[in-house]
Image (cartoon, rainbow over all chains, first blue to last red; front, side, top):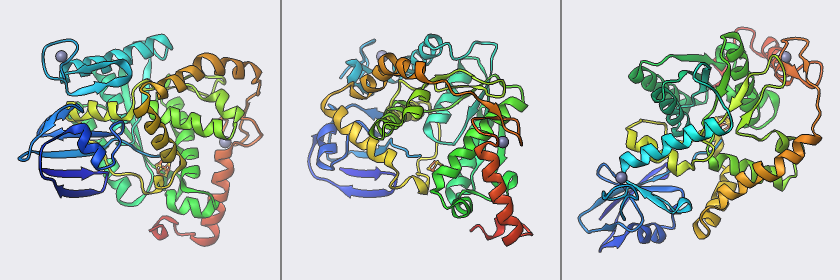
Length: 65
Length: 313
Ligand code: SF4
Ligand SMILES: [Zn+2]
Ligand SMILES: [Zn+2]
């Protein structure tokens, strides 16, 4: 699957195999409290299953100041 | 995972509330939070004129959107801070939002008001950028609200902001800051407008989710000066605790409001005077904004009589 991370700097990576949203975040060491995972137009909850052909975006929700 | 209100698949999970919502029911949840906070802390009434501090980030735009939607009279105020690309983009996003809603946006530029933006100000004051920036924002929000007949200033501070600030204040035992930290601060001086934070029960992930579902374009990039700020470290630590123990951030902040702040407030008896130069409330003779402005004007007179801003790049 294609994963685009905006943290807020943009990076892209490709991963093999299916996994749930919360597993993906864990692998990438991203806190589920401060990140939102989006597929297409939909926001996804942690239990959502992601497949090989999916393209997901991970957005950091944290701002400073 | 299903929405707890209907059979549709959930798009936002809120572990600390043991809930999950589909998009429409999530929006309803956020609207209810706002309505409840406004009512519970008597933040404002339908006849109030609200000035909303707009940075262009997710929190301020979510707040403005919610207030407009609920039918309040809510005018935006955006202060251009002169922080390179970040400020340019923030102004654009704020203008676009205002236009899309047909809402009024007051724009103010630090460069015009003061003669310099945040980066040069930081060098002149020899203090971190956020220190001068915060001083100007606080002062200008209050002053502009007063001058233009607004009865309350609303900011988009969320639960993460408040919990991180509380953590910072507790780690240094800042008594005065603790006594003043509140989502609804009554005016304690005729020249001081009431300040409210209607989103204080929503986390950053929740305000960002709201914007994404509503299709609100907000500035995702950070202010470059936020890097390495203590507040980001505290937010990260609190979120790590929150993941293991959902509800911690809320208990930390709400517990403080319910059990600690009343005691601190009782001890606090500072008399506010009117600043000799501008009339705004201060504890001394001249307020910190006017003292800062004097230093800035001295600097400009000596170093850049034809305008400091051009060198501020
Ligand atoms: S991070 Fe600091 S300098 Fe940047 S906008 Fe916030 S307070 Fe101002
Ligand atoms: Zn639903
Ligand atoms: Zn003054």
